[in-house]
Length: 262
Length: 325
Picture 1 (tube, each protein chain N blue to C red):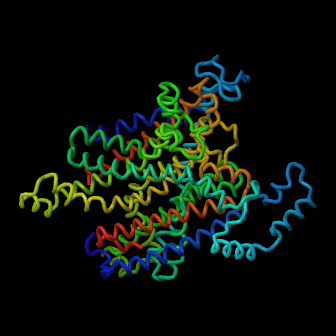
Picture 2: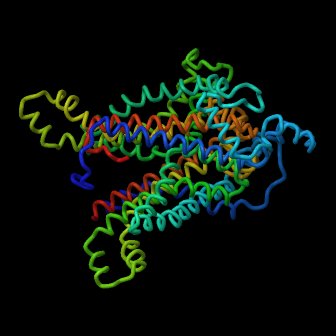
Picture 3: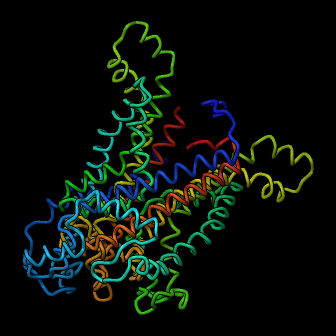
């Protein structure tokens, strides 16, 4: 099976952090009483406020994964209709009105935009989802618009127009369905990018409480004790690395598999 | 892609002017956006300056002193006029002009970014060319997989893993830049780990593009023709195939300034470098609005400028691919 060879290693690598992230909170159990900071009583020792690192690792992956996925979904939900509308409207001014402001957003470095937006928003997971979605919005809208333009120029569209199909049916039924392939190819880049932004923002302490159970926050907060208790930093950092590398390899394998099949 | 869009050929000066106008519009729009966003920051500077005991009268007095009681459009116009004169206002917490503040914190950041770019181009081109020449062989597959895997690993995670291994466990390089001061070059060993982290992502993406471009170029008719003319393999590869292969990479290089800026912010936080990224993070937590505005503007203007130059270079290298703006 060549196809399994293509995406197998990525999937295997990805499964470890993903299982820890999603199933961890159920496995973590009741929080133990706090011990001394950077102690070594338990398997992975304790963190900067004396919590069990093993338990924090189990608790800390869910926010990263869920926020990144939710932000990606939200970016598509908002960006794709925007792009399709811009492509299919016959009015040039509406196209410009929809797309030009998004081009300007693209000119701002994404982490800078994230820091600025997060500083103005209330802290929490939900605002972070919205912010990361906003940052991804221009690219999603641009890709959707380009894909829709290409599809709208096909003869099938002309035929549907002549048959008297409504604009809505043409947009949602034909263009929407035909775009799925392009959007799926783009999905990997989006998810990985969202993951990068969410983790980096949490590491910088943007939009998260300082003692949150979060892999990126753990890396940041436990750095001071790296000489005493390296696991408190290394384990969450390695989980973030495997999550990201695994996702990249998996999506790339899937992409090449589709290209070969096509 | 030939013939798509059927845009009429544009000369370089014409393209440059158009691109320059777009860049200017972008910077003005970014300045406006930055102002609007900092306006929305909860709690203004007066609250911060008033200290631990927020006395409403004192806050009101500070607001008047700072001119914060004027309506937003007036302050916006004032700020823009100041920008034209190069006046970015004064830091609220340090009391010094923002421009001086930026110049000081800019040193380490510019050093980091410049050295990264200097190393990035030859390394990425070399990796891409080697992979392309060995296409499909073990070396190519190893380089390509490593590149895809590392492509978007968050810098902070990579950084702490490297610090734990090379900084603490093996003790080869200093784990942080604490005590080095603003001139990082004074102690080059400090730079090794931050540079490794900063180079990881851009090398992956650019070498991939160089590889793809090089493979295309090596298969093209003109390279076959050059071979037939009896030119040496080395000469064909480096003088004929490579320039065509790097045009898309130049544009990607500009896009990596976005990453480089994100990377610099994170790397400065990990290695405790007193640069612009550190300044930004602490200004945000201190609500030091003039500093945030100044930093955001500098970052955004840099990105716009680099993209502009890259588009022009790419246009010059391969005019057909231009006209994207």
